[in-house]
Image 1 (tube, rainbow, N blue to C red):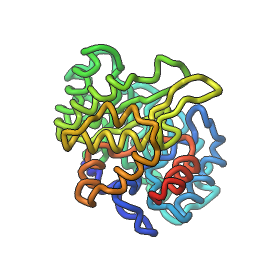
Image 2 (cartoon, one colour):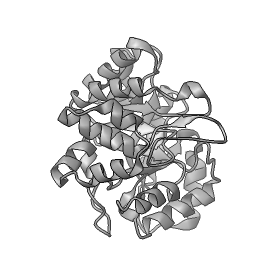
Image 3 (spheres, rainbow, N blue to C red):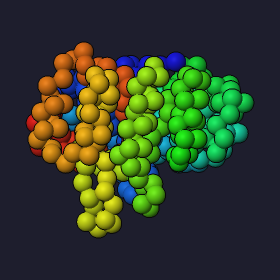
Length: 288
């Protein structure tokens, strides 16, 4: 199976190891909901841009694969798009979707398959995931959050060799996990010997409240610093709660390359419907 490190190969500008291939392109997903041609054009532009090294995989729902391929045929990318396939057609739809991607290797390179888990993340279901997803492709499974059963599901996903996914927000308040829930998740994953992926809600680097919705969003920089502290025995909850952008930026910038690689070996990447916003935040903080 591909490693988190392989996904974070340095970019053309020598992107710092803490940020290399950090932001997966989820332009097709809410709240961005970009049209396919716009999403592809934006991704290709970002891959050729100044901070291409921070850009990770392109995310596409399995139900929109045909649309993606049709647009890529028109665009004729110079090299295949590194793809994370998000399964929205049920586990039974995985083999066909994987086969379609692999049949268009001149356009797409399958790196990751992501899917929600059923309410009971049992061994039989996880074994089918392994059977359906090629060995050299990373499997990402999102257990349903809530109570001790959620963390038990996270542990089973880890034990099975898949990456657990942490959903950090969404279209309703219930989609936003508390600081304690994120801290508990990090405690489980940090000791589990496997990476995790985050998704949704991480629109900006630092924790903030959206004035339009009133929802308090986690920051991806908070999550990076919290992961570093979880590995070193520091105060994880304080890092997740902080709104001090300068202090968080300085702490992240002070990490050695070795420590940064260790952090990214746990917090591998996250999906964002905008590539411009996280890059702008990182530039403003002097981290890019």
